[in-house]
Image (cartoon, rainbow, N blue to C red):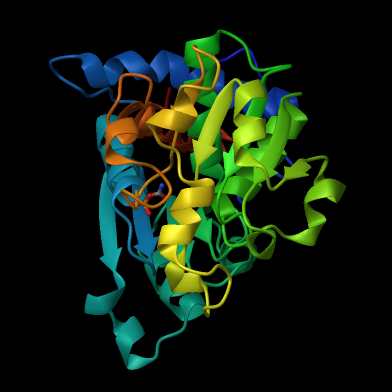
Length: 316
Ligand code: CP
């Protein structure tokens, strides 16, 4: 596997400081890994002998499973660390846990943690490559990359496209990573939602803000719906879920007013009937499951590039 681009990093902690060349290198590598998952024997020896640890302090279906599949399809050994069955429940800290894991000679640690910045702390203390699989409300870079990959697959380009991100922007690490990546690659991003769920820094990040979903959806190439993150909210941010769905839910009536070739995306998990109606989540224009499929290819690319990285541990 060769890429023309450049990606000499120890860790992937976010998309905020990635250059356009680095992002495009990941997307190019993902394209070349995509067909491996379609083969009868879905395995290549690229990371044979490497050890990947999935260290998840928050629940996950898509991210944890796809990092595990990505590592296994590259022939790495994978250990899934389940916090509820670990010594973390006896009070062991993240740093101690990571140091103990690394003493068993891990090569890459994939970490999800409820505290923003936890992967950055880990990256400073371990020699293993660290991949941020979601930290608090900060970033979810592999999701941002798989979303960019999916848009590129359908539109054949990224620069100049208009993207509308709708929902709970304040609590969304997916929105933040997408905004960083999209702005770097020259996409125009608009966010939409109740004023209580849109943080003040949006305009500083080069993003347009609107509270009028019906007007904004007519002008966009991509609609990205986000889940209301009830687990990170303390109430009172919108009147009721019914009212939220009425103003900011994507349904058939609204979709009829969008461009005929608009892409519908959602990172999952979906709250059906709240931010998106079941009919639209499952319609032919919805890319929700394709995003999940592409997540494996993008995570194979990340494991490959970080194993090679400046540390050059993988055999190619
Ligand atoms: N999109 C996403 O991060 O999903 P999971 O929480 O299931 O990993």
